Image 1 (cartoon, rainbow, N blue to C red):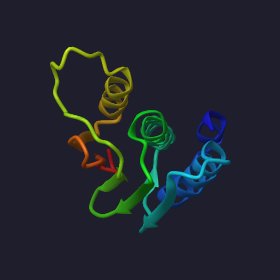
Image 2: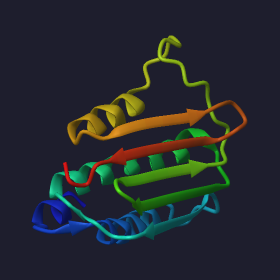
Image 3: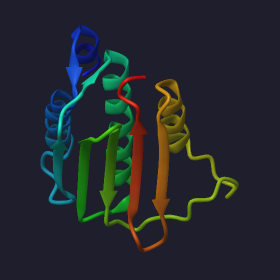
Length: 142
């Protein structure tokens, strides 16, 4: 997956969506849940760094869904609006989003650091028994 991004001179949102479908299919192969979908609306060019970084953030999010959420469904949406908006939504167990909850959330910290590398905003909305929504907003022209 890294080689795919590095070898690309031109990456776009549709290509990222195709790569994410391949990844999720391979990662969840043989699992009954979560049922998943990847939707792409619109298309904009991305730099190789933006494409790879978005891929890695979503990859971490998918792994969190499998390891922690116990979700029945997972939806990944990539939208080209004035900016690129990526959402990952699950219907799992959720969690309290607290910065100082006494736990070290390495996966969440890694996603935040990656988002900052490409000047993207990362938002996490979750609560116990309500699932989780991860939103990444990126100015595709950055």
